[in-house]
Image (cartoon, rainbow, N blue to C red; front, top):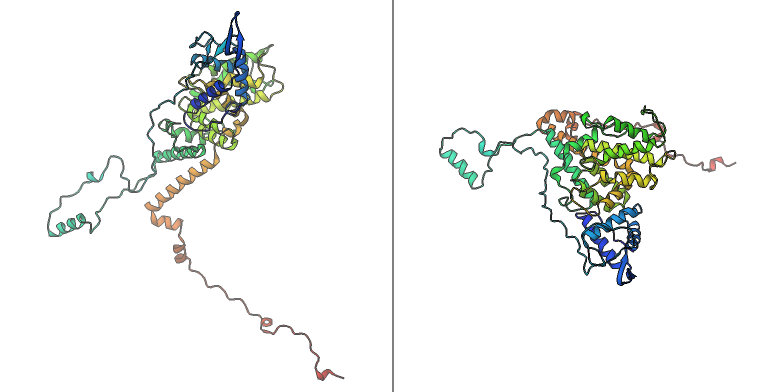
Length: 467
């Protein structure tokens, strides 16, 4: 049961749906069944379908071993609703599929989902500030000039310009590198870096770049605590105090220093339910609706763990600061609960790790429009986040350094053009250094007397020494 790996790119959720449908139709075992004294050929029971599809999803690198049997049942309900399967009487269209002995079959053809036709977002080509760009609201036509008295000399000059002998004069403006320019540089280089990591020709069908806020990126990079958690300027967007206290209680269990309420049997389950209810009633998932396709696209890189972490780092920089902070605190709590051996079971039917994924996956990643595989994709993403949250929620140092060097280079060029004399004094060129500090003659090496002597020669016996 091989499941082809669907890499990053647009419409990845739709591609995964079609891939799963084709594999299910082609390889699901069919046989003869009896029901109410009647035989049915080429069909399967609901329980058989759950067993086979659950095994397929668990062994797929697109979904992973964290897929539960309950999630498989939910997917088969969507198969029935979309006429991928039908009962033996030909009924379909409702999500009344149950894990039992009810018989089902494939229709003559199971419709594959067409790729959605999204309006292509126009590329935002962010230009770096040029020195000859006129300020907003000005143009060459609006430059005030004095009326010129036409004479033979002026006519000759204009004629020379017209025929191309003399280049026309053009007013050149010097612009300052404004805060808006810096924000545009951060946005442009961050998106360019993401596109490079994903290996895409364009981000148009994965991300609406017009909705990317450059202020969010800069805030997420610089306004952080020593632990790397985002610090909010607007305290009204913080987590409620009672939610934050409940999260600290479970993260530090059983040492709940901030919790002043008396504890009782099952106390930790009620605290967990309080946290789950708060996150479950958020109006928008933490990774936001408009970034859904971007995060789903990054899931195609999970086989290359280092690249996937790098791509997730960049995508998380695009989040609103309050969402990034909530995500950081939530992932830290989930990881600590899963690694805490003293934590009592929070649910009788699930292990702690599975419970964390099933409880919080939908409040982390969810599509605004109905996507049939969003639950499986969200569970896959949350599982990877839990294992690598410390790296993913860090600021990518290579990207930060590259952008800061670019901004510094532009500011240095701006200073050089505005104040060339001062720039030469502070940053001298090799030519100016040679004028200011002429090369001193190198002293000749001293000659020693022994250097003039002939080298030592061995003693030779002569006749005068004969006896």
